[in-house]
Image 1 (cartoon, rainbow, N blue to C red):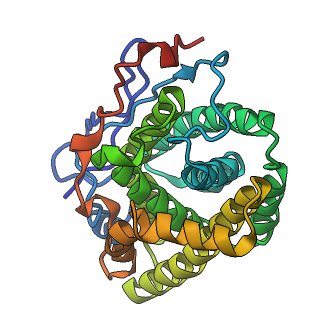
Image 2: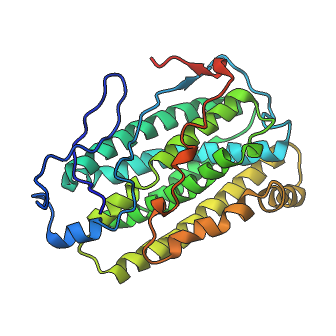
Length: 321
C-alpha cells in the first residue's frame, strides 16, 4: 500500500514533496475512514516519488524562426496550437484542485501545492512562447478564446466533474510528454530554446502525472467502483476528443495563415500526426489505458525519463529570479 498521508519537508532551495509519516504503524489518519484508506491504497504512485519545482526561465532575448521546428510549417503549427491552449488550461487545473485542498490528507495537500507551483511556471513560460508566435504575425488569441469558451461550459458543474476533466487532460499531456522524452526524434531539428521549453515541461508533466488521480481517489472514496469508472472513462473520451479536435482545427488555422488551403493543411497535418513521425498513432493504445477499470497513471512507471530534459545548450536557460 502506498502511504499518501505524510507532510512536506522542503529542502533548502528546492521545493519538493517527501514521505515523512510519523504515525504509529497500523494507525489510521484521523481524517480518513477505513473505506477511504482502502480506496486510497489503490494508488500506484511510488511511495518514494517526489515532485520538484524547476523554476526555469528561458531566454527572453532569443528569437525563434517563424517555422521554428525544422523549418517545417506543419510541425510548427501543431506545437504552436498546443502551446496556445496551455495557459488557460493550466489555470483551470489549478482552480479545480483548489476546491479539494482543504479536505486532503497532509501529504496530498502538500503535493497539490507543489503541482500548483509547477503549473504556474508552465503558464509563465508558455505565455512567453506564445508571444514569440504572435511576433511572427500568427493570430493565437482566437485559440485562447476557444479554450476560454470550452472551459466556460464547466461553470456550475460539480467539482468532481471538473476533476475528471483534469484527469483526462493531464493523462493526455503525460502521454505526449513521454513521447517527447522517450523519442528524441520528435524535437530533432527544432530551435534549441523552443525544444528545451517542451522537454522541461514534459519532465514535470510526467513527474506529477499521478497527482490529480490520487486526489480523485480521495475525493470519490465514497463512490462505488462502477460510478468512478463510468464517470472517469466517459469524460475521458468526450473531453480528449474535444480537446484533440480543437488542436487539429487550430493547427489547420495556423497553416492557413501560412498560405495553405484547408484541404492541403488537413492532409499534411493528418500525415504528421498519424503517419510520420506519427505521435498519435504511437501513443493511442497508451492513452486508451485510461478507459480500463482499475487504471492509474503510474501503472506505467516512466520515472527513468525524468531528468532527460537536461540540454547541452546551456544558453537556453536563464537563472531563476
